[in-house]
Image (tube, rainbow, N blue to C red):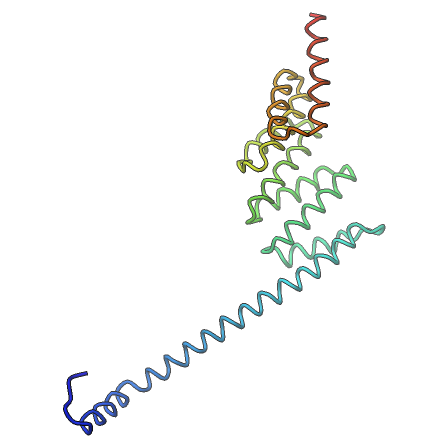
Length: 212
């Protein structure tokens, strides 16, 4: 605004400014406040949805773990909450139930869903490792090793090496399995199960060498 000498000229300039720009300023202010209110409403909606999903998840878990397992409700919950971590966790539980029932195709289906849909790297890694275990049970060793190779998070390295050892044992590659177990034990020094597997393999490898 140009320099104005008198108070009267300043008042007239302000009137003119509001006449030309007042509506736009008011609308902008309303939209700005509306955006703020909208953002708060959105946050409230998200929190409310998360609380509802959490409550429903707990209910579904009780139904899965109960004597009369309701797996249908769990599948419905996954479909209705597919964009949440609760859906991935539910799929993991369904996969466990399928493994317990020796239904390996269903277990693979649930684990592959998590791998394809979850945004949580740790859940994807965990699902890949469990998928490798299922594929190992099916003696689909190449697929199992490929599932393990997809896991790149350092936090799961020991688990990957341990499961790789199990797969190599089933393949009859005992020396390679021994190495894999040893590398896993170096990362988890107090893992008694790994130590037992290594000791068992040492005995087998020594016995094979003596017989040879």
